[in-house]
Length: 397
Image (cartoon, rainbow, N blue to C red):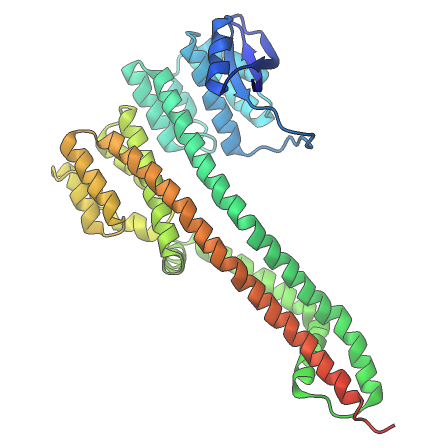
């Protein structure tokens, strides 16, 4: 039977850690609850030794905070006591400070959603709105559970995309470094030999040596220009016009991936908000805010207006012509059957799976292209040098 490591707390706030045998993670949680403790975290132990790092992202802190708070509230603990426990056991210094600030605000009479709103860098607007809806309906623990599912799905999707891009990134960096080393350090040694021997070198070799010489003489200038260009490009992206044009380029280059990503993100956010009791118009505004591509976001700007006029969301989304036809059909069915939130979550799940396949196809295309480019460049360098070496044999001695 598998063994799971866990972290739990008692109703008095005492935190314990250990291991437990269970058929799966859900069974481990049930066994811990039956023993009278509140499970905060249950996971399968890592196989073999791996170095432990304390660096954690704010998204990871938010997911851990939401999961643990949901467990404590679901066990019947009051909000202030739950926050007090989280402030004591938090592994992140930043999250510990935020939790203590939330606890002070709660004790001063503030609502939980208002306290969260004072930390916009940690808690996004849709998070605050979902909590506010949970407070109004008296189902804060249920809303936090839905939020936890939403954050876990978003993290899983983000991690999949990042992990898929690691190999192409490493390939690009190592290939670029190899080419720079060849041009800046290896070729100059051959250029000295060729200069001493004299004679006419082949055209490819002369071009290559000119590039190598320019890299040696003006490499610092090229590096400075590259840094200045990167800063200028970053500042341009911060402008609305620049971001819109760049998103247009990304949409043209990776249309399938971008559309599926934004469809899954929009539908999961909107479905989670609606299921948590957030009003449709407010949920639409929040869901539109999570769309990162400005082209798609601007195209669905009129969806809220259509919802206000009683058109629903399926027809305005179809008029925007940015989401796939299958997603629009499923959303329309959800509206007609009165199960819009459930259908939106199904659309999100379907397109998240489809997105993973699209990313896999894109990476399978990108990897050989990068290898081909690196091979052509390095092959040109090698062939140019061999042509020069062979030409040496034709020099009179």
